[in-house]
Length: 548
Image (cartoon, rainbow, N blue to C red; front, side, top):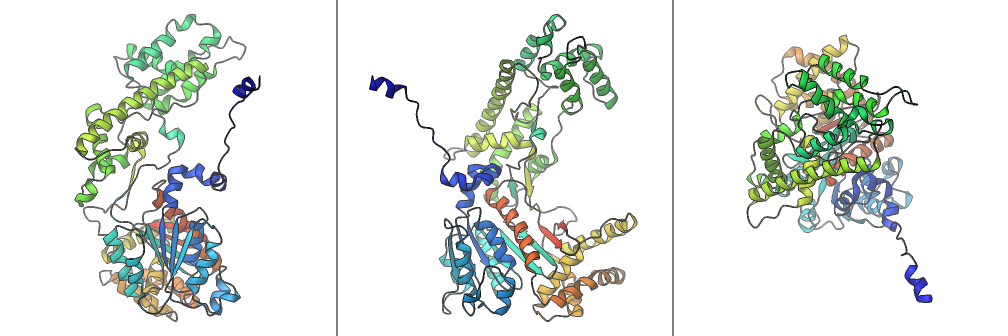
């Protein structure tokens, strides 16, 4: 009898692990794959100046659980640090700032490994740290930074394809710039759920046509329950066939025709039932404008298809192999692989599940074709992960390239010419904004902060900052353009000179949160990071993104 009872006892249900409970909210954002990428990340912070904004950024990376961090900071803790940095206390006075920060930041998340540098004055330079440490996933540095260390970081970034993030916070103003190693593709962009709906009503495949015909056969003789539970996909396919029969085999294309078609669907709803109408027909009418539309290639994916490779190593990466396979699919079929998701709709449960299975089967078939093509492109000895192909096919319409160098008359990123181009565009935009009472550009703030960093002197005055900006822009601006620029730079430069490289903790904390958010996007390769510079005006509480 005991054995029988034991056999009938259900297994013990396993609840979430301690780590899943700890990171529950963020797992909902970037899933287990994103968390795994985060936990394998190795981050370097080269801290300088007041040293607050970099620490605030690092705090927001330690809390969600990066794998390891290193702080390189040559400063000793002084009274100014104790007044502006929450991660230092009186016991830290006179000690290496990197050591104290690493210790106190490490208390936020014991699962994160932390280290600091320099521990000795001999052979403990930034260059030796980079050589001795495991490969860094991303590197942050704060202004002011000496030119030798900056060149060392840029060389390391170029050699190891490591993202480099520059952060500058002074007074009420801040900005950060993300330099990515070449073109950076994002597949898992997390588009809105409703945006990914692709029902293919204008190009249905045989299984979907058969389903719709079966459901709507003798539609007028169906009882009220069955008629009121027809899925709107079947309803629309049925009345699209009727429309084609009376319109020379064409689908409704103009807004006027779609409005007429929508009314045709509405008029087919029964009103003699207890509800006085039918919800499924209302859903069908509401979906007409969005779903009865010919396919057009999304701009982001078009950019991927037309991208010209400059790096042969990049061209052979898995992303580009799959992208080429999807391009071949599009060329052959005139459409993208089906995502396979079906929106909620009024229908009987068994019918809805049947419809879901039809879409999922088609999606699997399309993904299998793309996988076969990708493996042929990759060649023997190179495996293509089916999971990566499935993800690409599901999100193909929303794939995004970041850090793409412009063609034609667009100057290279980071060049003086690029600064001039962006400045002229922003000045032209300001003329329109002034007439329409819109906010003015924040580009003068970026230029003034760049000028302050170029001066490299905490006691720089307003004139020195403006002169530094002028040297950054070279001599290609007209006297009129310089006049407009100097006027806009004046107030910002005066505020920066008054701050003397000092940081306000609330501005640095907010900036640190923004930088950490963008770094998480880069580490997890999910969501779309800014491209490539974000400026924050703490006086007016505004941000603006520039591609410089």
